[in-house]
Image (cartoon, rainbow, N blue to C red; front, side, top):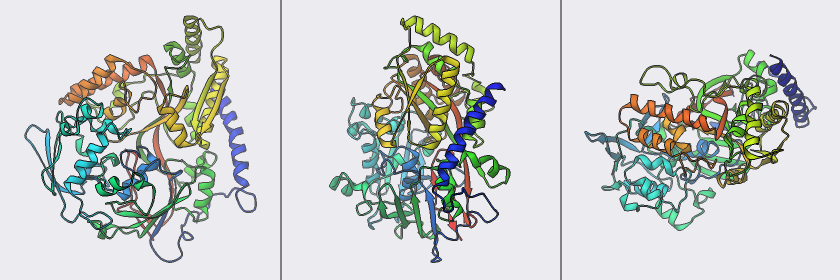
Length: 553
């Protein structure tokens, strides 16, 4: 309890600083308080048109489907484009650009039937050839997509992606304009969910071939979903309007969606109060200094979100090549204190990497069955640090730099970690921040010694979490490699018996924590404030938003 009180006071001091800073952006110099008619949305659009204004937090990394592999890109991309399947309001895959499909008796071969009325935003038909081209482009090693590994359940895709095969070896074939045949390496129940992911969206081949920067401008972007881009003021605002060419345009109620890019939760909250944003929260969260009051007032809606906030060690940089030093830095962090006093969004502290929400075929939930794989223990952390330093011959540790992408919430957590390391390990940690795209590139290139991360599930299966840390994965970003771990994941991906498959994944997760190339802080949820009159927004636990059924009065 003493630790909780101490960090509570520390965070309270931070909160007061942030609140005072936020006051300078509000007319009259005071931070608005919540009231009965806050966030009515009446001021967003006075024309009577159905215009929804949302916050994307920052510029999308890319709207080219194989490259935009993060939530900042997914929210926008998922409403501009559409795959063979789309997740419905119940979060299960349903027919989309494909109106139906057939499955072979062995469960490995799918034949998808493309709708004849599926159209691109330029009016041309969407064909099976577009999907064959897009999926092979996703796996193409020259594309260097961070999502390329998602294709590995398709026969021949892994060999192609790793340079050991060719595009012709990848078993995705357009039989004609309306039929796409796909053969899997083994029958997998989650395949239809996987291909609803934005990475599997089709692209307009002629457009891509003609202009490598096609996805960077409203003038050149060609889409096949419910909306298309009408205007894009980079790093400020993106507008999209309902597409008349979309096969299900009659279902789409919104005429326009405006995506603002506001990376400060206090500023976003103020815009919500004045009616200039319809929804706040989601990826950014609601202001921590207001959260208790807003939760108690019943203003906050929470939704499941399958994801984990965590920190990566770079094993190619000292001192984190040493396992005991990694474990020391992991066990010195009190995730429960961070959730209670820093983030304050109702999250669950993470004691493993795979989040709650996956029904284990053996009974119960995967996370409950996997148990707690990490425990806050500052005394053991200190002992492990001393042991690791002795193993490496260190009298003093090399300088430790913790990096995070620029965000008020990331900074708050990093500052608390710095305080914990000072108290429990006697280590002074330097903090540094970078703009998102710069940070992401540096992390991918293993240029960061110790950095914050997040993982939002791309499809509803624990393998999606765990396959991120196989050797050579673009999602690994730690330099960690373990042949036994790789083998367990490979076995799980080939195993048709779900009971056995889940057991293999439990073994893999235990091994991940035995060597600790990372440590988790909390499992995500979605805490949002939504204006009166807004309805039908579907936020999937796998991390992207559906506006196809949304409305605003």
